[in-house]
Structure formats: structure tokens, C-alpha cells
Image 1 (cartoon, rainbow, N blue to C red):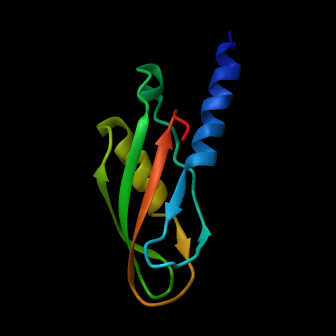
Image 2 (cartoon, rainbow, N blue to C red):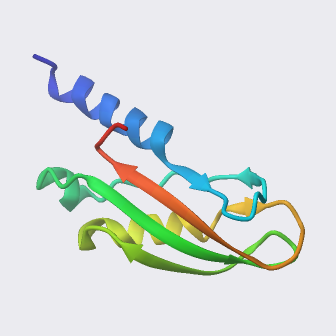
Length: 105
């Protein structure tokens, strides 16, 4: 059995490793931000994925981020992280990002 600290470290690593971008347009992600696992969600053992749709402007900055599904306790953390993503410059595109909290593939 894993201790609480080891289990928490593994969960944080899982979030960091599985939070990723699925670029529908093929646009390259230059920098990602890992969402902060909400304390209440951790205490309640809430796990799951949140899909966020982004509109990325010509400069590569995220113009808008909208949750397309996921547990309500996880949505704000995912949207806040997604808003900080940076993409390569190009035409305005829509991108879909999936963040996983406390789960592995």
C-alpha cells in the first residue's frame, strides 16, 4: 500500500504526464500549463477528464477557452490552464485539449 504522500506524488505526476493537447489543425503547442488539481476534488477523490475547446489567434495566444465536458469540480482548473497555452503562429484555429485528473490512460 502506498503512503499518502507517495500516492499524491503519483497522482500529480499522472496529471502532468497526461495533460496534453490534441491539435485538430496540426498546429504545434509551444508551451503547456499543467492544471492545479483542486483541493476539494482531491479530498472527494474526484477523478476524470475535462475537454476544453480553444480558439487560438494568429499570434498563437489562446483567445477563448470553453469546457466541453468534465466534472464541475475540475472544469475551472482545466480552463484556467488551457488559457495559458501558447501555440505556434498561424491562422486562427480551434483546438481541443484534454486534461486528465487522477487517472491514467
